[in-house]
Image 1: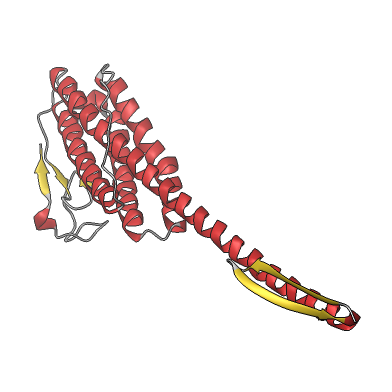
Image 2: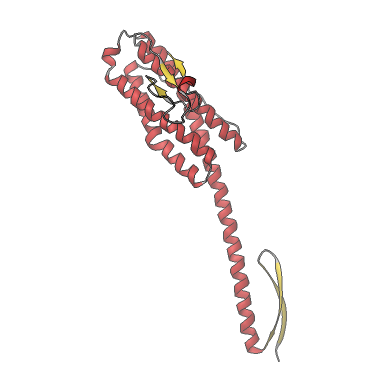
Length: 236
């Protein structure tokens, strides 16, 4: 009779001691080893999956940081654009830029709150805005807003949903909705720019919760986050 004694570490260090008795026993024990190896492979695969999930969460954090940086810069840029529009005699356009700047600040604050929830510090590198004519500034604003609406925020939302981070999804989605409205308002101003020369400041309404911006408050609640119209900030 052939008698062999040995131990093998499998399934996170568990020791399996077995004796093989004859040919039939050897086949049975080989099957046991195969099952143990399969369990070890599953544990390894699960570990890799969890690691991949951690990397995905880090990506959402990076996306939030990028969004925070972008909104912070948009706030600074639109304030400068407002001064340029005012100096050129486009009072209504200046008001629009100031309202949008306020909205971008709200977006940045919302993003910052989620970044802090994830244990990080919100970071922004404010660059000196390239200020040109009001027409060119509006064109730049339309380009930036449509990029955020059509590309940046949809991509960031896809990752946040994959990570099942509901707070990230909310702040990104609210910003995306507001940016779509900004793009529409900028496009309208650009199309009507010749008739806006010599206009005075106009009042815009900005939601203090999500940054939704409107030229008229023809609603009882915010179309995006349902905040009461009475809570909206008036920016001129």
